[in-house]
Image 1 (cartoon, helix red, strand yellow):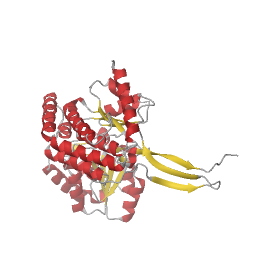
Image 2 (tube, one colour):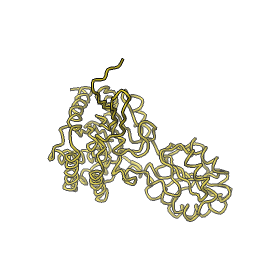
Image 3 (cartoon, rainbow, N blue to C red):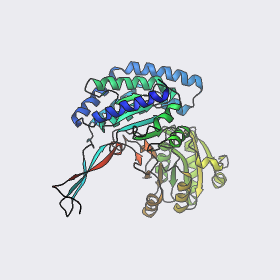
Image 4 (cartoon, rainbow, N blue to C red):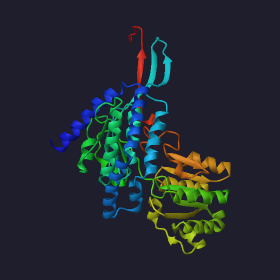
Length: 418
């Protein structure tokens, strides 16, 4: 069997599984998920052993610190996967939920209800926990999932997928509801996203190369989970102590993730006092600062920022700093150079807050809070399949509702159209 035949067969198995999943009750799906959580816990040592193989190869290959951090599986991260499953169990099942209902003058009753999407192809890199998050959200929403992780996490992903499949099967999970592509051949990506009539949705989550490969070859709908060029804007009215605390968290708590802040804008009215404080604080955390001319006039030893810096997702302890005149300039700059992921304003002025939240065109917009909260679990969604930077049909952290579509059920009593 060649690769095309192998991937198509995988897709057809997923279609059969999706039809069975769509018939499962919420109680049965929750029982399956609980069993998955227990199996992950029972296989903890095997998960860490598989991950150690991936980490050894990744270190030998010279992967970046950010990639190594995303790849690593620790007990706390396994605990988080297990907690994520149990959190999803506690959430209301959206499948079958009535969105709206109305009665037409001719007596037809029209009901709009949530239904599973069907078969979802998930593409991702490095982070093994995505194997679990994607699978549990798809199972809860009655979708079959085909997973294609990166070669750097192949052992970890397989160990997690095997545990989920074994745990789920014990409680009635249909065969092939979760499938992991076993080849690292990138041609498998092209084959999957061209399975019209089989794959209903493709979700790429990773670097620019992966997302472009999916989007360029796809013949099925795609929701992109693109890079996070996240900005924090410090308005003239900001509480400076709060601003320092938020920026430190947004940049330093975990710099290698998509919701970490990459750049700071600040009003000229406070820059002369605030920027030296910010530079001292971030340098104490080993952050390299790159500034525009106005910022370097205040702190001369900042590294000069290039035009390319403002469009860069560093995923590292590097931060761009730019001085702006006012909220309007900040908004225009973020809308031009950000990635429409997560951006924040630090301000006490209600008018500035309102202008920022109304006009910044991003999936998540913060007022006086860290961008690091852009996360399905932090939003109370239990887990996420990713953070969409698209606008249709989902935007921001994608949880259960975003993994459903809808259909209309029309109840009549013999009506015909004249």
